[in-house]
Image (cartoon, rainbow, N blue to C red; front, side):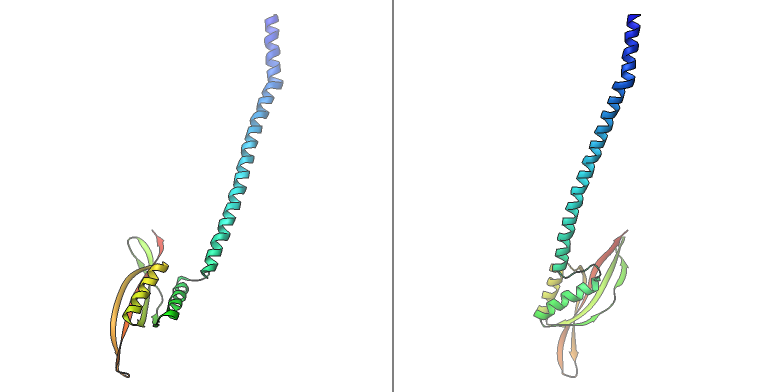
Length: 165
């Protein structure tokens, strides 16, 4: 009988005190884990904001805005190059949408007038600036019959990947 009452007392103590203590301990550990996740997310948020500010400063330094189109960026870079070199942008048509190796791309056709060395340095400048992939180049020798002088034209296609399928 004494043993039975002792077992009943232990089960009574467990049900009313120890089990609740264990439940509270589990809830405490869950809440501490959640608090740690929240602290980590605020740190990550702060780091992301700093990274965003840094990237915005780089874009501002390059004078690139989210609203600028790729055509505007190409024109800006060519005009920067044009200030230092004697080239002339003759034609800049709208983009041509193409499907290349299951990739949607846009080709931007350009016609530029200048001498051979300056046109080659323009091609190098475009590649160095990372404006896009130079897909095709074609040099054309033309004659101005009014002045009876020859001049060189560069037909150029710059490819920009739009989306991958």
